[in-house]
Length: 74
Image 1 (spheres, rainbow, N blue to C red):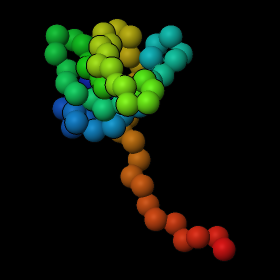
Image 2 (cartoon, one colour):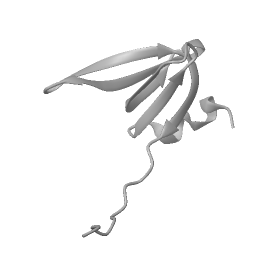
Image 3 (cartoon, helix red, strand yellow):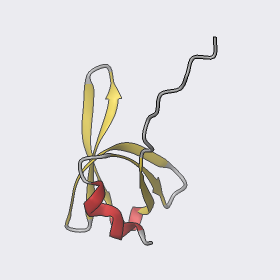
Image 4 (cartoon, rainbow, N blue to C red):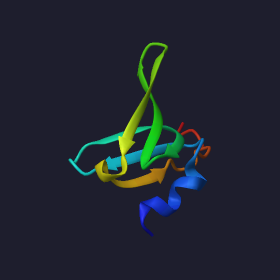
């Protein structure tokens, strides 16, 4: 499924984004408007930034997997 079809179900959720330049980023997908994705990314300490990515920069987008409880190994 092309990544564009996933956008509406991923808004408000943590996502990983593969960029066409081989890099990637992650954050919370805030919205998609005007062929741009808006993502809140963590910078450092208590600072976050709202970044925008043009559709042509994106190769794929995926939601983070669910966490699950593991039994301690001891």
